Image (tube, rainbow over all chains, first blue to last red; front, side):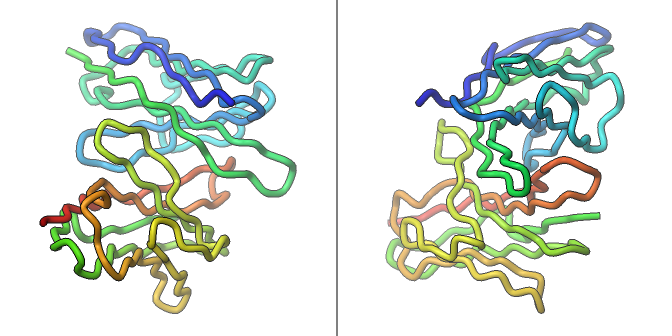
Length: 115
Length: 111
């Protein structure tokens, strides 16, 4: 069984640039969630993808967007980067069977620094 | 809106002492509560969930709907318990299957 993987591990960008972060789900999982964790804070829900469609969104602006692919891997895209976007971005995968969703398993995260 | 509050940023105890990490929540529906743990240089991982009602690594947590709390307890702290602990709530407010996390409590077990 392969765990959740994320790439890259670290990234430095400048204000106004765009960034794409990648996540590979754990084997057998069909749902991916993305979280932003600022320094000293708990993770905050950005959005979730199921069957390649967005299935819930947190309080983040539209410049945060995502994709889920047929193999259940996912991308998080952030446009027009701002200094406050500097954070650890976590991906979590889970299995949704219809009514209940199983435990979310987290990846190691991508640390983004915006200068 | 759903909210999770962990009032302590840091909790320091001696080895063998009891541990209680506090968690209070706010949610209008029927909540599902979790404790996640992050050991040094490791990823966030599930410690326990209230619906399982099990003890993991000696930790237990009881959901108290009257007090809207889900405190994490262990009778005798071990050095390897030192880690960051996050309480989380799962709800469907706003769509999806999102987890709402508290700000975390750093547990330090001293010898």
